[in-house]
Length: 188
Image (tube, rainbow, N blue to C red; front, side, top):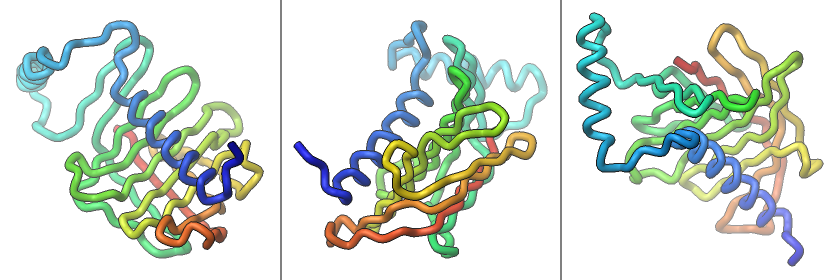
């Protein structure tokens, strides 16, 4: 089956978001049943209180070689226009020499989400970036597609991914264009 450009963009976007979400949620080989999550949350809260840490929505865990952090500042633009996601959370996972960044609202009231995969090294390499908006616009970059370009920089724990990517409006799949984008995320 040959993928048309809009379908390719959608497939790339879904793959990037899925990879980021799965990596952020995975615990390696030490998978934990969902019914123990409240107990783990209570343990983490107790440990934070015992160490004098401030209460916050930020968490960090290290399991199976992956370091995951939740919380942090973010911003994103498409063609210079700010992308907004109400109550969005930043999740960053470092695993196998890559940083996976996912930005989304914890509830399901919005269809807007952002993801990026950055291969660590000198220089950093963007392996994928996606912005999906509620209005049906999907912007995706993957080097294998041969469409667009992207660069990444890091300053401390703040990653910036910017470039040009193919954009498709899913309500009008024949309208494909190039859009500039920038994603800035601080991984706590």
